[in-house]
Image (cartoon, rainbow, N blue to C red; front, side):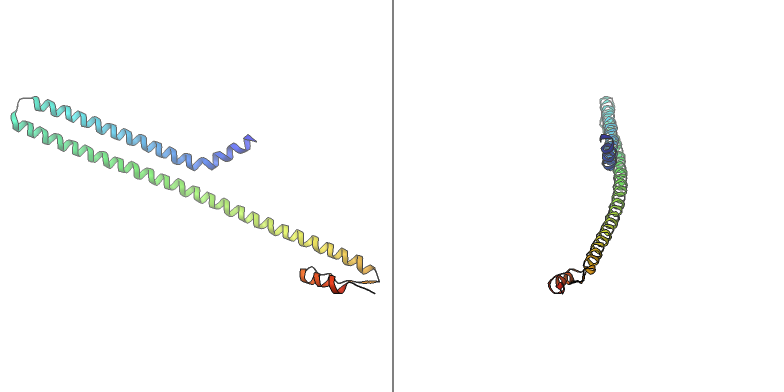
Length: 170
């Protein structure tokens, strides 16, 4: 029993597992991106503090501060653009997985609906044949008896009428 259930659960959960792994991968990339940005920020801060303590006066300090701020701005912009690319990629992959899962589910539902319809039609035909066979059997039984006049119909309204008015004993 377990061998039948486990593959079905795996197949059903595959889209969710795929989306989760895509999101985990994107999160790992984002963490690496932020870590490298923060290390770069700390590196630039240390570099700035070294330049501020070096002899050079106010002009040197202002130039070092300007260079540091432009480098931090540049690195942060690149980091945010990389993060955006990571998120857009994850979003498109998630969309593809969801689209495939929807298409597959739609095909399964359509197939099962067609099978159910075919089974319903087969059952209807089987019941109709059995009812006709019983009606024929009853007709043959009553037609052999010379004392009874019988009219059998497979339609419910006609059958009710037959019971009330046609079963006449001669």
